[in-house]
Amino acid sequence: MRLSQTLFGVDFQNPVLLAAGTCGFGEELQDTLDLDALGGIVTKSVTLEPRAGNPAPRLVEAGNAMLNSVGLANPGLERVCAEKLPWMKEHLSRIQVLLSVAGHTPEEYWRIVEGLESVGGFLGYELNLSCPNDTRLGGVPFALDPDALTRVVQGAQDLTDRPLLVKLAPNVPDIGPIAEAAEEAGANGITLVNTMPGLVIDIASGSATLGAGSGGLSGPALRAVGVHAVHRARAHTSIPLVGVGGVSAAEDAIQYLMAGASLVQIGTATFADPRTAQRVARDIARYGEKMGIEKIEDLIGTYQAEHRPVPVSEAR
Ligand code: SIN
Image 1: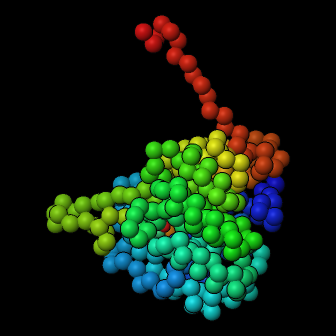
Image 2 (image 1 turned 90 degrees about the vertical axis):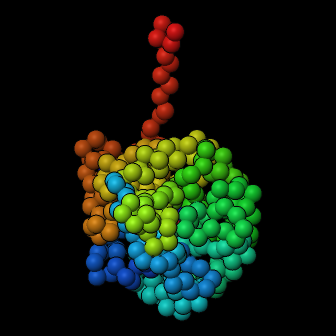
Image 3 (image 1 turned 135 degrees about the vertical axis):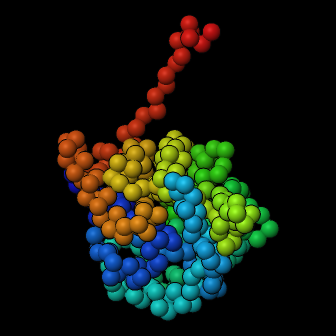
């Protein structure tokens, strides 16, 4: 099966990307995996100022999941422009690079986009509007407030011709209308979903196991939530979708593709096996060959929600 596809005007050699916050800026994983074998990467979120991050421990187990509160640790805009972008330009020319951007205010997002634009050398942006560990000043994350989301996206669109994706949060009653608001604001793509807010308490000490208290839940427990979010967003929008949450095998990625995602991201699973993304891409191709599917586009969005009416006799 042909895995490559054209999206946002460029070629993705396969549909598997590494998720924001799990691969640094690529350089950090260069000795561990073959970055050229990926569809692309999404960098750690870039903030205006450097962030040291939250107190340890930043990652803990939470049943069939992981809970994190890293606190957006990153070198900040200036050093990303001076050190990370030049490295990525030189070493990541075969794969697609999206820069994740996070801020406390709309103006912070816009200043970061402006700064990154002045250097260039990457495909586009994934606006992180949904970090559960570092909320917007004076409010809930932007992704929980369609008006705030619209303001950030519209302002960022005015500053760049590059594709602008927005990353949404799972903890909303219905993600469909939020995805619709993102498209109407000018987003070129939507990533679904960020982690789910969670808390693990150590009952011996009565304290949270994470240094920061609560955090964001990821891993297998998030997968069905993510697949459902993609399915709902697909029903409300026509722009490309990117599925993330609980992908560790081709079977997981294929669910996202069938629900309507054009690309998938691997996050938590990379921590256990850094070569997960390569394996998932290879096994998607094997699945396609087994099923007689010629190209990845023929798999995307093939899930149709079934309407199963309850027979009248059973409903009584
Ligand atoms: C973090 O750095 O705390 C996580 C970022 C995110 O989930 O958006």
